[in-house]
Image 1: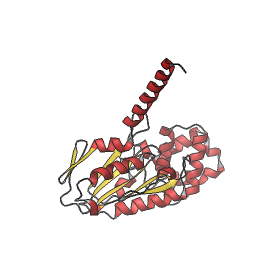
Image 2 (image 1 turned 180 degrees about the horizontal axis):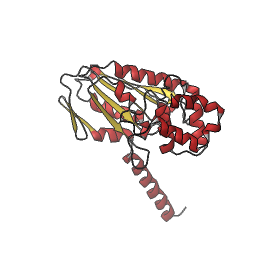
Image 3 (image 1 turned 120 degrees about the horizontal axis):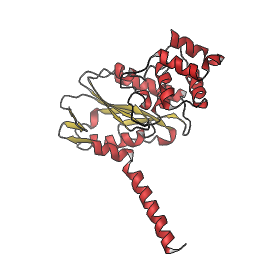
Image 4 (image 1 turned 120 degrees about the vertical axis):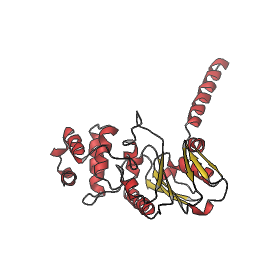
Length: 259
């Protein structure tokens, strides 16, 4: 390899490394969150922690491990809040690692983009945690790409198998994320704003790393902390558009959406 070609290769590799470092999830959170004395600043929002008994960190996503690690770096920085920080995030199995206060739960195998029993268990833990908070507590939700598959919480009348079937059907039929997630939301006890509804803390803030063009907050991770802009009829129309009404295995999904 000539010197000129080696330089081009090294330059290209350096540019790639710089680009990856610029969007590192741990680094992004550390840039967005600061703590001074008893005030937590998240972007342009301030949270007084003087009378806060618990800081709960919850969420899901492929970038969740880095986001949680970055948040821990900030929250534990001055030491005075060490005893009140707790949390649970659903992440891919290859991203789970020990952290100081936040549990990273392996909610699905790496490379499997569909709901699993482990994900259901983790989602129940998240719902129980936010439901146990007091109004004076602070809840911080961390969301990133893959959050929809990592946060399965089937509504009554819907099984995990039903959710797996509808995910496989729509994905196999070529549905995009704007078509898949409105269906997911209508079958979930945690998506479509239901996580926010379950949270008993008066203060809930969400940090999001988007993987959806245009950054629609109700689509990213199926919008567990924002109002749902879709309805069951939207989900039925999407399923019908892909011919799901002809699939006997999805009959229970249709019944649930029409109930």
